[in-house]
Length: 188
Image 1 (tube, rainbow, N blue to C red):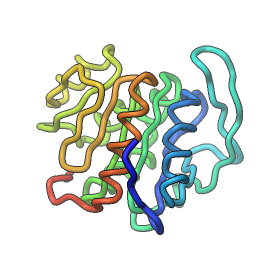
Image 2: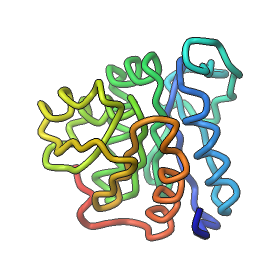
Image 3: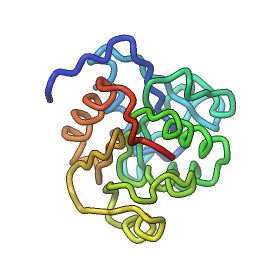
Image 4: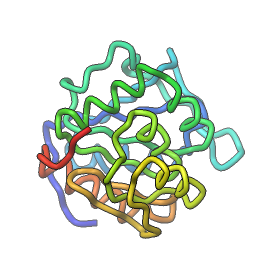
């Protein structure tokens, strides 16, 4: 992974129960090692349950309730996957508004696997280039996205990857976009 210094940058990780654990922990550690400050934002109070595939993993403490979170307090957003996590977030109005606010502020957003479901419901994928877990390609295309099956896709501050195998490339591009800061082409 290339060296990217994101010292002083605050990065929100939006998730809930059912998150694919490695899609949280790997980018979280990458942000921390690059000098950034990660914060777990969730519609759930207390802690969230991680999963390793279908098996329960660790629990993670929530730093900020999504209803109280403001995109203005963060420099970037990361959306880990996990089917259950993504399915619950996509219907949460506070989570949708929080995610959309990053696009409205032109801030970097990184999404992996099933995490992009919320972007459909937030109305921010039309005309955007991205990838995801292969089963979401029809949903994303129907929402107007330009979906491709690639390890990592970057479109004006929007970073996307398919699955945990892509994490090294995902983390590198995520850090690069966070280091670059706002992108005028990153819009809702």
